Length: 283
Length: 181
Image 1 (tube, helix red, strand yellow):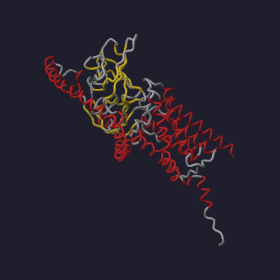
Image 2 (cartoon, one colour):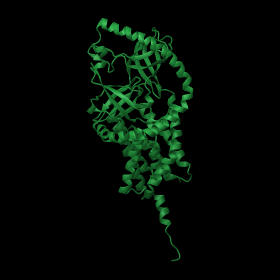
Image 3 (spheres, chains in turn red, cyan):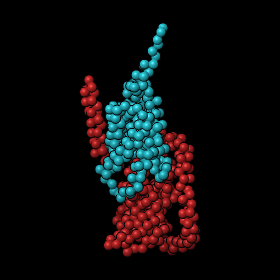
Image 4 (cartoon, chains in turn blue, brown):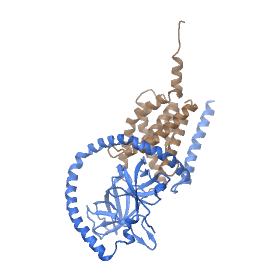
C-alpha cells in the first residue's frame, strides 16, 4: 500500500516536471499565447480591484521606507536642486532659441519630431513581477483603449518601457530595467549615441553601451531617446524622451567604445500612473 | 491532507489570493530596496501542511498562474515552485514539525532555494544584460523577509485548512471521550 503511494507520488512529480519543461520549450520566445491572454483578461478586473483596495496599505509601507531613506537623501537633493536651478535657467534660454531655429528650418511638422502623432493613454499600474529577472508591470489599459504591442510607455519623469503584450482591458509593459530591453539613446547636449541596457538586479543603474570612447561624456548630462529612422525602419521610441542622468562615465583604456552608467529619471520601483504613447508612426 | 470539494475550493482560493496579493501588493512595496516574495512561503506552507504531493501541485499551479498573468515563458515559475513545495512536503513526511520556529526557518531556507532556482532558470533561458552583484543582496533580503512573513502565512493557512489536516483530525477525534456515564 505504502509502496503504491510512493510510486503514485513520484509519477505525479515526474508528470509535473515534464509538463513544466514542455511548457518552457513550447512558450519560450513567444510574446503572448492565447492561454496567457485569456487568463490575463479574466484576472485583470480582479487585479484592478486588488490594486485599488491595497493602495492605502502600499502607501503606508512606502511611507515607512521613504522616511527611513529620507535622511541620507536630503543633502544630496539640496546639491541636485542647486544644479537643477542653473540648468533650468539655461534651459529657458535654449527653449527660446530652439523655437526660433525650428521656425527657421521648418521642422515643426517633421516626422522625426512626431510626438504630436502619438495619442497618450493614461493607465494605472495594477501588478508587478515578483522577481528581478522579469521586470514587467501590468497596466489597466489594453487594446480596447487603443494600446498595442510596442507602444512606448512613459511616466511623468521619463521613459518607463514598452508594451510587450496587450489584451482587451490590460497590457504588460516590459520595463527599461528588464534584461530583454534595449533602447537607442543619445547624450545631450553632446549628441553621442549608444544603446541602453539594464543591469539585472539594480533598477537604479542603466548602462549606455557602444559609445565612441573619443567622445566626451560627463557626469550629470542628460540621456534621451535617439529615435532613429533609416531605410524604412524606425526606432520604437520617439526622439527626445528623457531617460536618465549620467552617473559615471569612465573610459576603459584600449577599447574603442566606452560604457556610461546612468540613473533613470522614472522611479521604476514605485510606478503608479503611466502614459502609453499610442498610435505613433513607425517604420 | 484530506481533500474534499470544499477544501479544494479553499486551496484554489488561497492560490488565487496569494498571486493577486503578490502582484498587487508585495511586488510593489519595497523595504531596503527589495520587495518580498510570498509565493514560495505559501507553497512551502502548503507542502508542510499537506505533504509532498500537495506541495508540488500547489507550486505548479501557483507558478503557472503567475507566468500566465505576467505573460512570462510558461513553466519557469512552475518548475521552481513545484520543487520547493515537494521538498517542504518531503520534510514533513520524514520529520516531525515540533518546534514553532521550524516552519518559518524552512520558509526562509526554501525561499532562498526558490530565488536561486528562478536565477538558474533565467540563466538557462539566457540573460541579455549584465547582472549586478546587488542581486545577492536581493536574494538574502527576500529570504529574511520570508522568515517574518512565514509566521502569519503558515499559521493562518493551518487554521484555514484545519478540517483537512490529518494530525488535527486525529486530535479532534480523541477529544470527545466522555467517561462515567
